[in-house]
Image 1 (tube, rainbow, N blue to C red):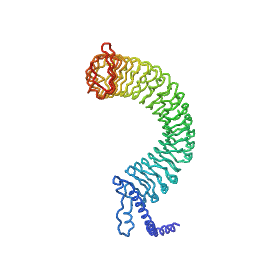
Image 2: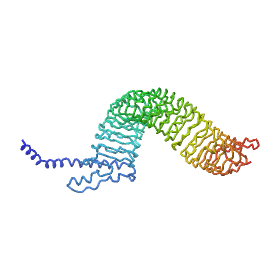
Image 3: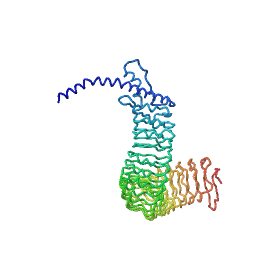
Image 4: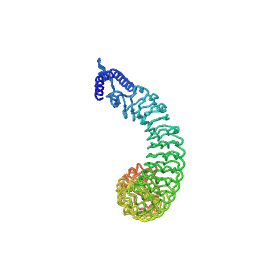
Length: 597
């Protein structure tokens, strides 16, 4: 049998060159004609575009003159578009990819001959200035797998015929003015965000079994989230935020075992958070904020061990924070602000070692801040303001060496401010106003040079303003009003180069104004009213060219002061009300005139 096999192979090889020759002679003229047709179609579309001189890629799109040659290969080389920028061809010289993203193209697709590109796999026109509608003839691109039309000015409906592109896997048409979605199928990625899409999400969307990414956010979509979404077994990303969706979250969403990102925020969704959310074992991001959700947070949320970002703020959620939140070991953000949460902060929250943002503000949370909060070593922002918290701040807060933003205002907190509040040297924003804090300013704040904004007004704080505060190179806002501070205004405030607002009103500050205050040249608002200040207003305040609001009323300044009109050309609000029985003088400075007696 071996000799027969050898003969057979030998005979086949004798005819192989003849077969190849016949194949080339028959096929090559067709390929040549095909590539010529593709090049001509591209040139026709190019000529329909506007402002060709500004294009960065299309100057390479030109056909070289043909030569009188009997060689098909010679003619083909001059009619091929495969060397043009943005064009990729297969081994037969047929166009498979067109990528003209960010090419400064302006025009329409109406003159693009889709039927000339039977082998096109990828069509990318992102980030241009294309306008008009998507032609229905796009269905001729029967092999297309990637279609990217985002960041243009396309309008009208997405044609139904796109549903005929059975090989289409990726469809990006975001940031346009498209209005409706046709019947799409066989997709893996669908991004149509930031258009004017309206109507409802069809229940047939559940048939897209291969879909991994669905982005329909920032549109005008209405209606309910269909329960059929739960059939998208391959779905990893579901972005429906910033629409007008209503109804409740379907419990079938718990079937999406591969889902990593779920964003339904900024809609009109009602009802409670379904306990089935706790089945989403792959979930990394859960954004449900700015809706009308009610009911309590399900304890099953503690099962989401991979969850990094949880945002439920700006809803109508009630009940207490479940202790199971402490099981979310991967959590980085926790936003529960602006709800109707009650009860206390669970001590289990101290287990969240990776937590960097904790926002519980604007709720009805009661009792004290648990000392376990001090275990959150990664915490960058702690927002607890506008609650009904009581008792003192635990000293363990000083352990938060990465803390930059600490807001505890509008509560009923008592005691002293924590001594080591700026131990890490990173604190930028401190808001503790409208509480019942007593005592002096912590020494740790004196050298906290990172401070941007400090709001401590409406407390019972004491101490000498000339000793309690240092020089802050980054400070732009300081409000210490309505406390019991004493002492004199020395030159340290004038050494805060970025200070824009300083409010020391309603304290017991005495003495004269320091001329060095005039060195705080960025000051726009200065309120020293209702203190025990005396003497003249120093002429150095004339250097405060940005000052537009100055309040000095209810002090004991001399009425005759050396402040010239030209120093306050930008001043539109000055209140100087002298109530001293000797020098009764009033000057309300609106349309400013020289203030002398």
